[in-house]
Image 1 (cartoon, rainbow, N blue to C red):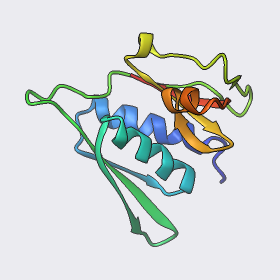
Image 2 (tube, rainbow, N blue to C red; image 1 turned 90 degrees about the horizontal axis):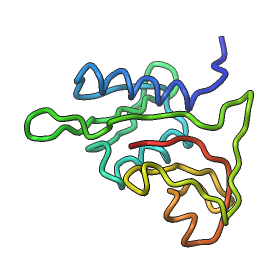
Image 3 (tube, helix red, strand yellow; image 1 turned 120 degrees about the vertical axis):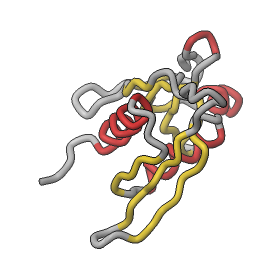
Image 4 (cartoon, helix red, strand yellow; image 1 turned 135 degrees about the vertical axis):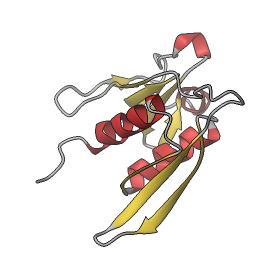
Length: 132
């Protein structure tokens, strides 16, 4: 059976593994998910990510990041644009998450960017998710 929203599946797996204090979480690989993982690593929400060959296709594995006393580095994740209701932001109306403490992930014509990168480049796009 085909998956309707693979990005929502990725974010849900990440949210569940984070709340259960797992060290890693695996999911089917795609370029979009790898780019999201790259942004999460650059912003300091996950420790690392890797792609490995599986029996069918490839597997994306995210290594979660915790503080010295096992504090979660991800407080919350929210999928914004869904297949049933797409959410777009103009370059002048890019959303900020928690007053700049979180990050919005946007799919733009320049690839996947954070809200700050999109504002700097002056591009808008589809708001995929909020992470804080």
